[in-house]
Image (cartoon, rainbow over all chains, first blue to last red):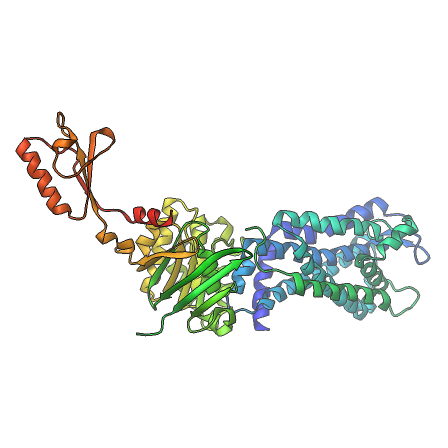
Amino acid sequence: MRLVAHQFRYDQKAFWRNPAAVFFTVGFPVILLLIFATVFGDQTIDVRGGIETTAYYVPAIITVAVISATMQSLAMSLVIAREDGRLKRGRGTPMPAWVFIAGRVGNSIVVALMMLALIAVLGRVLYGVAIPWGQLPELVVVLAVGSAAFCCLGIALTAAIPSQDAAAPIVNALLLPLYFLSGVFIPEDELPDGVVNFANHFPVRDFFEAFFAAYMPAGGGSGVDWGNLAVVAIWGVAGLLLAIRFFRWTPRGG
Amino acid sequence: MPEPVISIRGLRKSYGDFEAVRGIDLEVHAGEVFAFLGPNGAGKTTTVEILEGYRKRSGGEVSVLGEDPQRGGRSWRERIGIVLQSCRLDPYLTVRESLGLYAGYYRAPRPVDEVIELVGLAGKADDRARSLSGGQQRRLDVGMALIGDPELLFLDEPTTGFDPSARRQAWETIAGLRDLGKTVFLTTHYMDEAQRLADRVTIIAGGEIVATGTPEDLGDRDNQPATISFRLPPGVSAGEVPGNGTPGAGGELSFSTPTPVSLLNELTGWALERGVDLDGLEVTRPTLEDIYLELTE
């Protein structure tokens, strides 16, 4: 555990000094929130009896921020470390291999938590979207399951990424369409049913629905959407199994 | 005689149908700098990665610090240091931080500042790895291998691709390891590197060991025939010169002889008698480079 904390401390340093990592995990979601809220700001969205666009986008963009802090950032940073030879080099030390992964996962989860707070505060300050303090336990549960699942998916995805140059295109080619199709970027009342049904096969949609329900529970419900959360967890377990089977420590190129 | 630090018997490694290492034997003893020399693709990296525990062997016996590297655990890893052939360090961590990170992996690391001094990066301690030159990054890499205070250090082609001044700096760092009493297993394809740094050199080619010895006596260099050569004096034909010379380009005459002293005496005696000079007179022994090329071709 002390080793994990040690590794985590250095991963944090390296993360915040890396302009590309900070831009994509922190800057990008903030920019998305500002753009969507500005463009569609004074409309209402026809879900749950009609809510304001800004109230819809705050949990939607937190969903994006959590996925990019976990799955996206982990897949990219692990592929870079693998191809640089750093994963292999670390394996040559007495440090157990899982510590390296644990440090990165810890980094992802801390950044995800920070992004939750940042977007929630921006939503409150700029657009008057209430922060659901009463929902804190539900949010923690959903976030814990979601972060863990998307971390596992990110680690599994590294096996499909052959080189550093391929990392960003592959991750974005998977996630960007899913954000659109799952109602994250475009409110779901604007999407044809077929599209939403298609997106329902993938974990972005389930995580978004679970997170939305926790952030804005409909009519006094508990706010934990166990069905969607279970689907996210199953994806996570599948990712974990794939990661255990296919993750590699040595560079692929050469 | 104490047990060797590294002992290899009949080591084999195949990748599919290709046999990269074909039954090699070698021993490395405590405190020596051992160079494993060979051209690209000779089986050097395969061998060193088997010793480091990264690869599984196909056959033979291997012992490193008394353990089989395939089963080496944490306490075994505490005792070895590894510099990979190519590894980019975290570009966003400073020299001090990179060493601090690795120091945390070991039970009894050397002090970070001491290692910075040791690898000659004192002025760069707070610079990020990305701003270091290739030679400086390599020295940091060596520092990260030294931070756990290992008994045995593996260096896989530590200066490949370096310019001459970076190589010289890396050599100074490696030469310093000997003074610390470390055992060093070095692979290289540079003859001069092996000659400069190693106590003992083994040459591998095509997965087999072709020669082993000190840099001085490698390939039986001491007993190889010497070459005497000079330019043929004007107006003298090759046939008039004693000995059995071979005419070469530019009117040069050369002799290969196991007894250069007596042949030289005979030749100079003849020249004095004839009243001619032997321009460009030279006696040479085959260089290590000559031996190496001959063995690996």
